Structures are given as structure tokens and as C-alpha cells.
Length: 220
Image 1: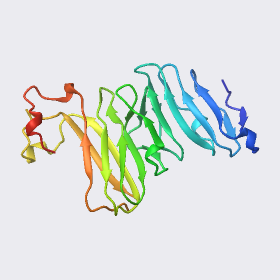
Image 2: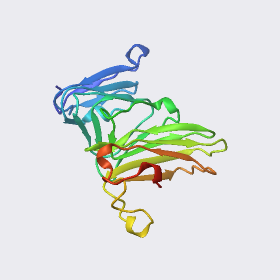
Image 3: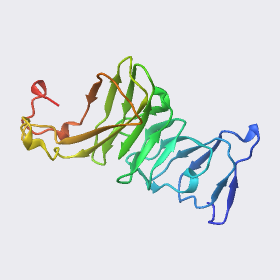
Image 4: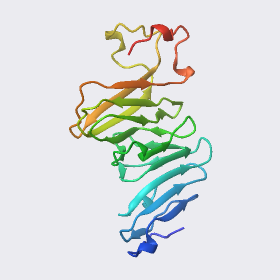
């Protein structure tokens, strides 16, 4: 535990690079100094993020928490390294986002019904063809999205989120609200990304379906 006036210095030598902080219990309220890369791993029970995410050299984040544990993140955060989702849920506060600035498809590792993001997940997308996973969901259900971009795509970024319940405009569509998937996804583009077409795969759990939902006649 670091007190509010404590300084944790990440040195400027090569040997100090890629230091690792394990956050199990409590909240880090001290100050990180230094510019070298460092990684943060969360374990244990539900908690809020602290000052461990405020260092200039933050590179990679790993969630390896207790099953069903929630890591609550206030405000937005971006990292240039890898987000690894092994166990536990990362909950991003409303109107904020968690952003991966690396355009590598491998900037996100893992993601499952045991570990995903609640809230806005933003991923950088490079020029050209590629497939990008967005392991998102709500606190009650895992509902990931996979986007496929074609050759000729102009680089930018995409933000994906999902929430429980039907879309608010469902009555204005030809979708039967009583035979639907009770889930709403939002996919937004940013940063000038352009593409002629793209593929989207939306997944959900059986609990999201109405009793009379017919998968063979489903439309988006």
C-alpha cells in the first residue's frame, strides 16, 4: 500500500523498463514517476482503479481477478500496449471509454464470458484488411462483436458498446419486439476511418432471447 504522499519511481535505465505492478487489494493513491514502460496486473476481488493507471509509461494491463469480480474504471483511459482479459470484468463509467491505440489485432488478448468490458471499447484499425474482436457485454451478459474490414480500408478507429434491452427505435422497424434479441449494440467510427463495406458478427447469450425468437429468420 502506498500512502498519498508516497513516490514510486520507475527509473530511466533499461533495467527498469517493463516493471510490473500487481494490484490485489486496496487502491494505489501514491504517485508514479519516471517514463519507462510498466505493466499492471489486477487480481483478487472487485475494486476501483487507482493511480497505477496514471504513470506516463503505462504499457500493458492484465485482468486476472476472481470469477465475477469487477474492476471499476472512472474516466477514460488509453494504452499503447496489450490488454489481456483472463478473468474479471472491466467496467468503464458512462460517457467514457477504454482505448487501445495500437492498431495490431493482437493488442487485445483473451476475452470471454468470464472476462470482458462493460462500456465503450475503442480500438485503432489500420489501413487494409483485418479482423478485430470487441469483447463487450453488460454486467448481466457477455455479448461480443467481431468486425471484419476489407482491403482498401483507410485507418481510423471504432468504438463498440452494448446494453441490455431492445433498441429504443425497434417499434419503427420490421423487427417483432416480442420475438427478438433483447440487446442493443452501438458501433461508432472515429479518426477518419473509411471502408466500402464491412462484416459484423454479433453474439449474445440465450438469456437475451425472447421465448419465440427464431434464429433462422433473424435480421439486424
